[in-house]
Length: 203
Image 1 (cartoon, helix red, strand yellow):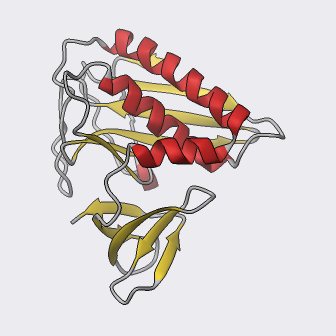
Image 2 (spheres, rainbow, N blue to C red):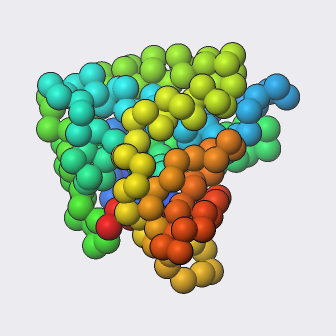
C-alpha cells in the first residue's frame, strides 16, 4: 500500500513524520508463520531491501549505508526510515523514503535520492526487492539476512551515541549485530553491550 501524502505520519516512539508530496510512503503486511525467524528481525529484511531498491537509482550506491535499527543513510545523512508495528500474528512494515524532499530534522542531517524516480516506480522496485529478501529470511534463516545487513552497514568501529528508553545516552563503537539482530556496542572500557531498543546517532 502506498500513499502520495500522509496527514498523520509518525516515526519511532510516536514522533511526527513530515510527508511532503513527491516522497515515498508505503507499507506492507507480513503474516507470520510458526517457522519464521523473530518478527523484530523484519527490520533487517526491510533495510536490505531498501538499500537494494535505493541503490538501483544511484550512479554510485557506495555512499548508501544501513544504520541500526531502522535507517538508510546517504553519505551519513538520513535518506529513509523503517517502522515495524505488530498486529496479532502479522507485522506492518512501514517505509518512508526522501525521493524529492529532505525534511529539516533538528537532530540529524537528511538527504534525498535526487533522482527522477516517481513514488509509484520506486514502490515497484522496493516491492520486488522486499519479496526476494523476505523469501531468503524464511528459506535461509536470520543468519543470511544478518550477514547481508552487515555487508551494507557502516564500518565496524564507527562511533555511535545511543539514546535508550528511560536511560542516559551511551557512547561506544559499532561492534556488529548479535545473533538475534540486536546491536552490539563496544564501550570505552572495553566491555560489550547488547542493545535491543533505542535511537542511534553517528558521532
